[in-house]
Length: 376
Ligand code: 0PR
Image (tube, rainbow, N blue to C red; front, side, top):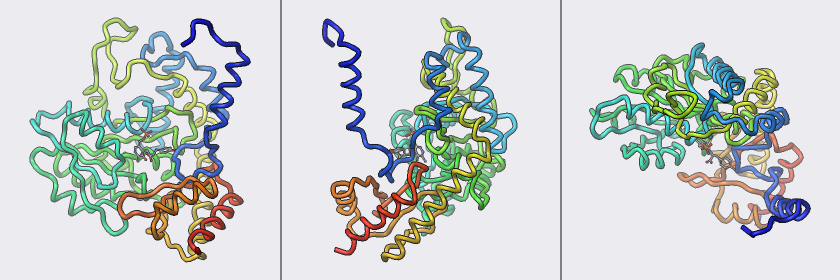
């Protein structure tokens, strides 16, 4: 930092330069985030100083948080849910597994997650010092129930199912996981960080949420398909005691206990999420999810026409394309045409997420560029 500050004009120029070096989302097919909705941005700005870490100072914002958590709970079939707005899927998953650990008296606990689980579970294993066992997937990239059962031992404290896997957009058989959890008296956390704002709005209906008795917690992220601002995640618990397992005494705040992971946390994200969920309603989300699914279907059809098949027929707006040498193709799409795509770990395939920032026109351009590269 310099001794003397710079002028506003100079600052604006510096910020504009940095901003112009960022990639606009228009050619991004690798992200699970998108431009936030205008109403979310406005609400975020209005509540910019609100700190949910000390809610006694911000009772207004805190009431919005309670409402937004209830809205999410109702969306996922739980009329009285307990939770808070986190920074995203990673924090929500950490909190779900912390609850499992804090409520158990097993010496060396383990949790079983699908092999397709997001890398946040590797971070969690490291932070919590627990074993995270990985269950195999079936041919459609859903967790294999036989594999889950075979991994359960006397140290297992919980299971994780994914509703909208990061790489395949696949939904695990949460109903079977729920039965296993109930039979074995285990926690069941559902990672719906991506799918939580997609699955309820699809034409096909899936049982993946609190409608299943064995589901104890769910992560769903407003900053992904919820169109809120970053950082907005949601962690929901069916039972109050499970949130209580996360409590810490906070003697010098306006409240005496806190269950969140971070201390200071954004009230702006709370207001933004409240705003966009209230403004869009289920109807609005259904419409946007339909747009994304239309783009998804167009992409798959277009890819098939040029001889490229998806690994699975897409369940939601995530597509995996079976191509030769995906790493080179990914680099060439970026370097020669400015398209950003990503790659699945196993098997290695091109992974595309069809977010609402994409248009049919841009998708056609993408398919043309893809065809040029695969034909050579
Ligand atoms: N659970 C699932 C199923 C996820 O897909 C993700 C993130 C998380 C948890 C973790 O969420 P946070 O990143 O909010 O903590 N999935 C994407 C990924 O890692 C996130 C992402 C978003 C990546 C935008 C790139 C991007 O441009 O692939």
